[in-house]
Image (cartoon, rainbow, N blue to C red; front, side):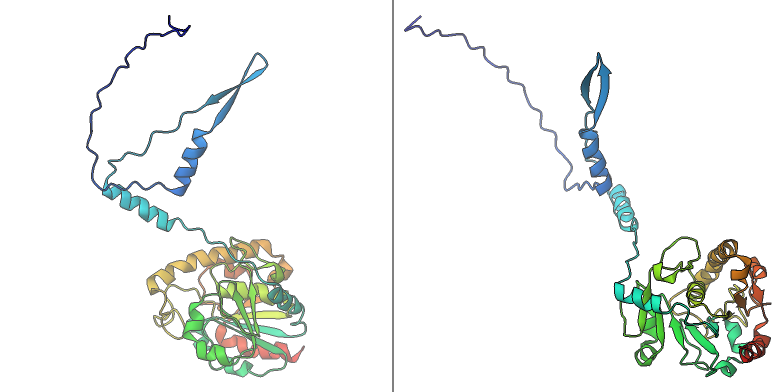
Length: 321
């Protein structure tokens, strides 16, 4: 002991040998955002265990790190999944467009509405007789039929329609009905929120169910406007077409014809659903002028006319309003 300072023995520390293990060159480990979040939550997860009235905390150990030797094939698969897992959220409609939609309420009272789809059967109907009739409003779907153009209204919910018909769009002064997916708008345009899923909206100012069919969307707008009767042409939905045509103008340049044929079945489910939602009185508002052309069972639940005979009956109906 020196000056009351105690010197204790210090034990030498054991030195462990370290083995260097070479790692693969340039291995990139991709962790999906959802995986990273799950790992973080797992690490801090706490389990409450009641013991003697006290609360003990049990911490779950984090999962093992990803395998650094993951194959390039697995990495490519992960990247592919990350690209395809995209969720689309329909944008809300602005206040100005909602006000325009609200102003449409009841504007069809005392008149008929003619919705003109793009099915090939419209070429066999004398639609030109319906033009410029005071008790008849017309609504073009996607590509307009020049015999009725310009129609009172024009509806399309796919941005490709502006690209293909921009000249018509620029000079058109009637009402244009779009979804919020159509960014290019003009003074007479109004947007409708696509609610998505199956359904049939009775209040278009709150949104509509497009149902993979612009005609289906237009039916809801027609009901909102309270027309006396809505006649629908060109809703053929026949995979065989007429003379090999699926549309009155030929082929849709943006959709493969074989893919388009398969979509008719999906569209028909929305019309079936509408028939189950609407009351018999509401269903009677719509008359499909595709009898003998449209092969889907839902047609039996609505009023129908043959497309070649419908125009004369519509004119007679209008004369009585």
